[in-house]
Image (cartoon, rainbow, N blue to C red; front, side, top):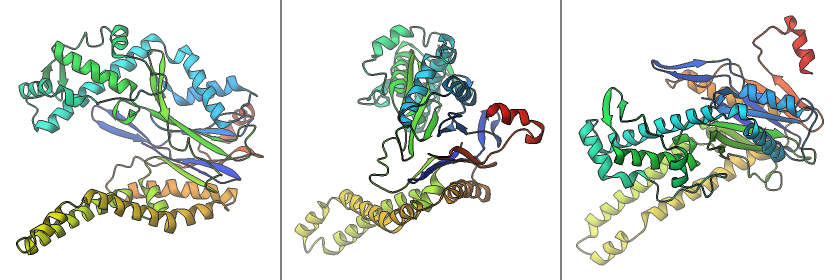
Length: 420
């Protein structure tokens, strides 16, 4: 996993990222702490890119793709950061080396496998059993519960139908007459294949990539030629299937900076620690508090029912008709407003006045604190390694504040010469 952050005020935008990458294997996960996640998107213009989650796209490392694009971009510039983003997406779409038919087939196969495991795991939890006959019977009897009532397709998949999908991949489940889930064999007849096909289609066009395969978050930041203030825009991109790019907008893409607020802080991927610092409370704890508040109200009402139930039955009926859910929503809204006034707004106001050095130090510190929490608790150390920090300003362009190298700079002066 990853921790990435973008912080910007009117002067500059800074990107910071850890170096940890988690690789899954048959015997568990292995964490490496040497990954590069921040890159200059152009050698000539003030624009950078950071990535989180998967380091690969269609089997190709993102670092390779980004540097190939940078070489092709050369001196070319665009008016806005969103134009850079659109050109980059256009590049990887048209560059067939990233999306051959065989690569697309691998992508749809991987999505199908994940869909099968998701369907069976959902059934295991529902019936608390892995016994093959019980699982298969439940799946057939409750197939409709697996499917969303309606799925709004992501951009590029509008109008793409289940029938078209079946025609395009007629042999999608041809090799699957049975599946092996943790050593147990489950047969797949035509009815189950139809269930899997429909669910795979839903996962294909759905924007919830977290539940439907590996994806990469790409964060574009910097200045377009016509932008005097920095901009940040991100996407989540999964793969290319049916010659369509599976992607959706990410955090920060719709931020109206600086019209609405004088600075912005955007954490990505593992952002629990950063959110706690920014908001003054762990987001998970806030959910627990709201749920406990609802439970307490219900307990309080029960006490009233027992106390005055016989003497005032009409009052009890009125109390029972109260909407506790609305009270819980009001409680959360009050807490949200309190966080905004006591924590978020003062912090954003302070960030708006930070100089370039302080912006970079703040970004590095927030990533380090995320690593530190993983380090001193029993959580998996999925954030770690050196913290890379880059700062982008209109006048000075893309500047490295901290950057690791896999080689000694004094022995590779030609690298610096060639880069510049």
